[in-house]
Length: 122
Image 1: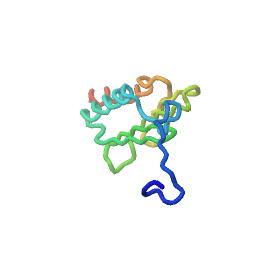
Image 2: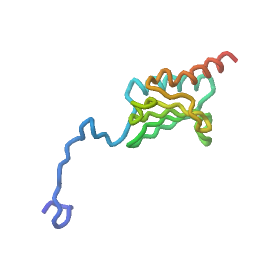
Image 3: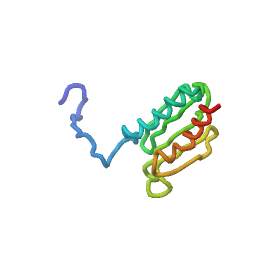
Image 4: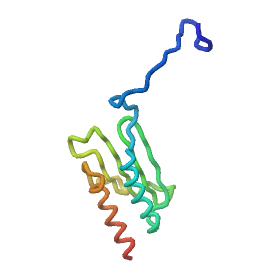
């Protein structure tokens, strides 16, 4: 009997899961770099002050806030299950409306980039 496992229980070593069985969805380094670059420029323009990331089995989400106590000003969601349909990236606005969907993250972030240009011009 193994120590601490109780009667009839045996320890089992489980190998690291393969790429096909991810327990959660995440952003790849290039995706996160692109999102954080936009976030940094929005902070410098005074538009955003805080962010949050959430990862689960179905989606990875990056939310940007004007103030931490409010709902997100913008939210980028990566949902690989939609890759073949409308694209795995979705940009949501402050009230939950879909602003843009697609397979290319740069194109999906374009409405926020335009907002940044307007904020700097003012």
